[in-house]
Length: 374
Image 1: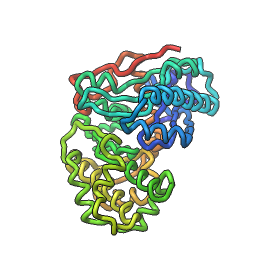
Image 2: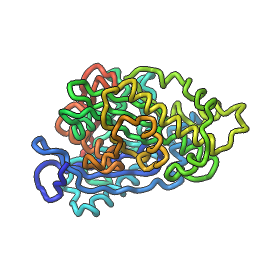
Image 3: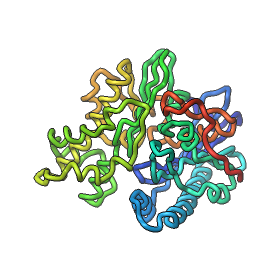
Image 4: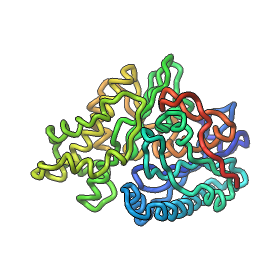
C-alpha cells in the first residue's frame, strides 16, 4: 500500500476505535478514492484515563441509574475522541476542513444481537460539535436490524485492503476479542469472532498484579498450562458454534473465568495466565483449521500482535503457515481497526454497503451508520 500523504486526490477520512481492551482511543487518518488503493496518512493514540476505563467496566454490569451514568460517560468519551482527532490532525499537519468524515466506532457497552441490539456509546452529536467535522457512527445497528450480528465489520475492510488474487490469506485481529477474516481467492470472505483475545488475560493480570496487561506475555510464559482447566474452558458452547457469530465481554468476563476456577484454588496465578494464553491460541488455531484450511499466510494485527509469547504459541500451533504482522502488507498492526472505521465512514458518505452478509448473517448488504453533520 503506497503512502499518498503528498497527494490531493481522494477523500481524507479519520477512523476512531476504542475496543474491548479498554486501553484508549486509536485514531488513523486515511485517504480513500475510487481509483487508488487506500493510503495511510497519520495516526495518534490517547490512553483512557483510569476513571474512564473503570466507568466502562462498571456499565457492563446491570446496576442502578445506568442511563445517567451511560450518558455522562458518553459525553466524556466524546471529549476524548475529539482530543484524539485534534492530536491526529496536528501530527498530520492537516486542517479539519480538509477531512471528509470521522468514522467513530464508539465504546461497546453491551453486545446482544440475539436480543436484537448492540450498544456503543460516545455521544456522536457532541463529537461533531467538538470536532467541527462530519461524524459517522453507530455502524453496527443497521446490520443487527437486518438480522445480522453487527460484528465483525472489519472483514469487509480486510478484503478491500489485504485481499490478493492468488494467495490464500487470513487476517487475525487480536484485541480484547479475537476475530478472523478468511481471504481466499475464488471463495467468499468469511469472518467471525474466535473468542477471547487479550480480554481474559488482561482481566486476570489486573486482578492479580494490578497491571493493565501482561507485557509481551512474560507472566504467562513463567507459568505452566493446566490441561484440566484448559479442557474445562474449551467446553464453552460458543467455540463449537458455526459462524456467523460474534461475542464480547457479555460472555467472556472475569466472572466467567472465576466460575471455571472454583475448586481449583491450588493453581498458581501464573499457571492460570499461561492457560488463558493457551486458550486464546487454541481457539484461534482451531478456528483457522476448521474454517480456513486453505490458508497459507496469516497476518496479525491488534494489541495481541505485540504479545511475544502469544505469537510464538500461534506459530507452534500453526507450523504450516507463514505468520507475520500486517505491517508486512503496508499497514501497522496497531492501526488496522481504526483505519477500518475511517473506511466505513467513507462508505457511508458514498451510500455504499459496509457489511458482508456472509460474515454477519444479515439479510443483505446494508449502508451502515448514522451521519452527524458538523
